[in-house]
Length: 310
Image 1 (cartoon, rainbow, N blue to C red):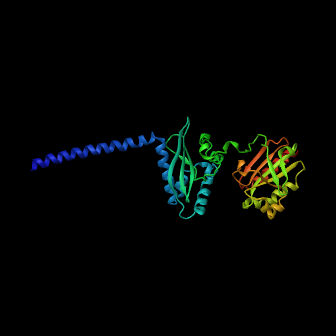
Image 2 (image 1 turned 90 degrees about the horizontal axis):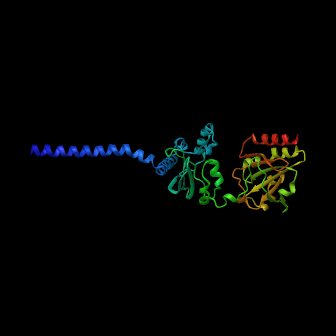
Image 3 (image 1 turned 135 degrees about the vertical axis):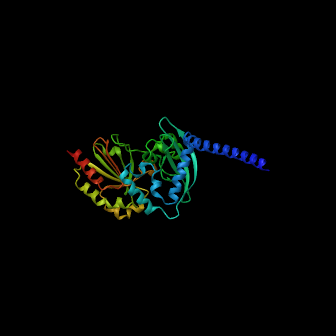
């Protein structure tokens, strides 16, 4: 019995050693295999990102977020995290992550995913320069303009646009140093105003929303710009997602000294952050473009107008 026991024990030790060796080999090679598979790495990391979000660990969650989400400034990270803590609804989770498309380019790997967030499927875009460390957008509504993804991840390839946003290449854009694209707006009286009607005039556009508090709050200061104008500048305020009927009873619209107008097609304009200000010279070339709420914006508009009035 003792000899048989010794034989069996020795055999078991050999089997155990064999499996230990196999396990060690797998542990050494598995990370390499994962590193050689950027798509797998993307899925692993976006799942980690979602887990941190769902557990309300917003510090680690932000480590997976593209810098464009917080203005490309490290100093804005804390504000971004604080905003998440304050505004993420209770119980909101990122779930059911699915790959839509994965593409490899010369300098990056990129992925587009769908995720269920607050009972709606939303897009998440991701990018990696080495196939190992991935950065992602937050969940984006399916009606999101592709231009927003480009602002968050500038290198995100336009070949994804057809999967997200069929109107991407058709939208009117406002680009610094380029002529202002033709427009046709309708004022509160029902009259149209076009770019051709404003030859030789500087143009200031203020894109705003009726429900945007910062848009409303800056109206008195924008009115001061109109009052100080030399007469060769036209001030126009296209308001989005608001009917002409509601504007006719809106106090904000009534006191606004800009010409309040509505676009023919809201989705036809590449405007994503409100308020958005555009300033042109007399040749209708865009000399200033400002987006979002920033106390310095009004100062910059004033300086741009004063510079061109000399």
